[in-house]
Image 1: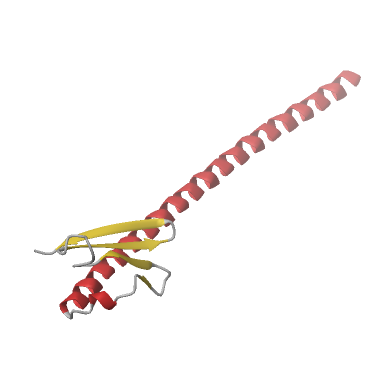
Image 2: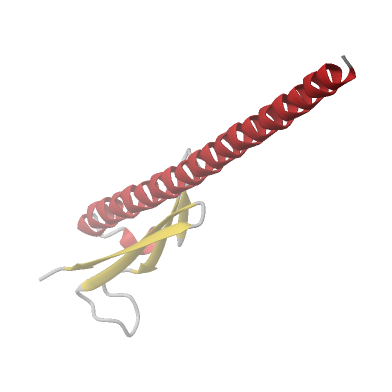
Length: 122
């Protein structure tokens, strides 16, 4: 009889250890999945910031072209802030200082992303 009790205790211990190993493996899988999805979210947000910066730069070029047609480009501020936090930086305007009079540079920025667009007028 005492041997039978010892065998039951060993079986319970083995089952406990096997259960703990399985729980640990599942926990590691869950943590890995969460980390991978967090990386995907970060990459997606970076792409979103980059796209918004590009659209801000394109908007800045359109504003510059419109104002240059009105001969009011020299009255543009150096930085415009858009409603969602994007910025438009007018780096070089047409006929601005020592630079080529037919070229302009406009930067759009959002978060840590920045896009610089160049336009040449012939």
